[in-house]
Amino acid sequence: MAFSRGAKGQIGYLFNRLHAPTRSGHCYSSWAFRGHQVSEVRETIRSFALKNAYSQCASGRQMFFRRFSVEIPASEQMSLIKQLRERTSAPIKDVKAALITSNWDIEAAQKDLRKRGIVLASKKSSRTAAEGLLAIAQDENKAAVIELNCETDFVARNEIFQYLALSLARIALSVEKYAEQSSSGFPFDPEYLEDLRISLDHPKLSGETTVKSAITEVAAIMGENVKLRRGFAVSKSSHGVVSTYLHTSPQPGLGRITGILTLEAEDNNVPLDALQRVGSQLAMHIVAAKPLFLTRELVSSEALENEREILKSQAETSGRPQMAIEKMVEGRLRKYLEEVVFMEQKFVVNDSMNIKSVMDELSKEVGSPVKIGKFFRMEVGEGIQRLETSGAAEVLAQAA
Image 1 (spheres, rainbow, N blue to C red):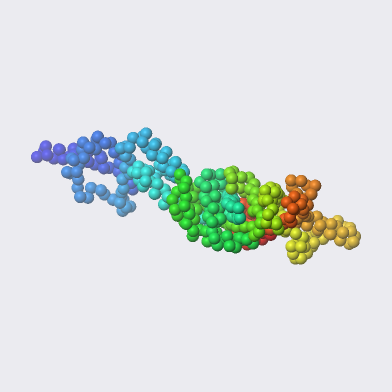
Image 2: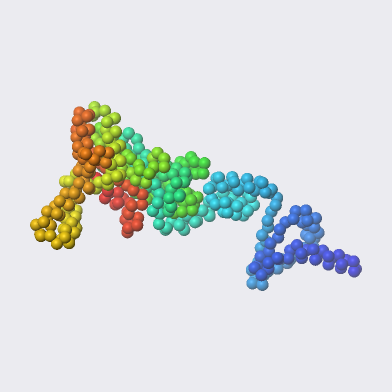
């Protein structure tokens, strides 16, 4: 009898030692497995386990056990962390936490990371995204440009972000709805693109999904707000070319500023090489010189009057006579028109001639009149710091 009570006492002590909460003041218990020790007493403990062996904390909440497994060797753990990191580009801390939570099941951990990333991405969607890239896709007849924004230029340099931007530009180029309307220059609604299907083929971003889901997934990977802000499509309406130029370009098709225009020849037999050469130079000129109007006739009377009032108020501070002030205003107004009217600007490649002279020289070279059809300039983040306006309205305001 005494022996029986003694045996029970020793086993009971062992049971309590193995199950005693080490930090009960925080309502949890840490139980580190020591494989061979637990296996030796497992059966003995099980036979003496009581129905209510796990007591509640003083606060009334049920205790839980945090179990650290050493069944996976350290070298294999590091390998899994590296693999998941390469798959997702998530921070190492998050990768390790997901693997531990998923008991080192890499597929379950990847799924867990994606779920958590999408939740975080939705929380960050209201944050200002003024950085990013412009992406252009074009063929012989048409070009499409989109602006994909993020919060920092660090993310804009990431290959996944750049791959997505180029993929979105190709989708925009392929939309028949825009092909029909882009002959006159057409800004398109990003929300329409977001519902389209997109097929991705990148080591860290693959499969078929919607544009909106792809953007959300990249936002989750990057840990920043990623937003498709606006886009523009343009095509030539006669015999000619669509010319583009990208400034600060990390790779072909991407940049921070773009100039796009169409050159159109009256004679359908004119070779297009000369048009393409000059068109590329003029697209670069658009980026550098920032023209607002194609010709002086297209400048609205309201814009002229507003500029005249500004120049007049500036000239009046000089204290000169009224006649002198009027001459100053007219001179400065001519200077203003030379700065904002495309055809009157000095050519950035050769400032001894203006754009009108460049077009006259091109027409003589090809033996047929050549004109500029459409042009526009876009820059990443322009207008975001001001009161938010629609992306379509911003592009329309810049289009010729």
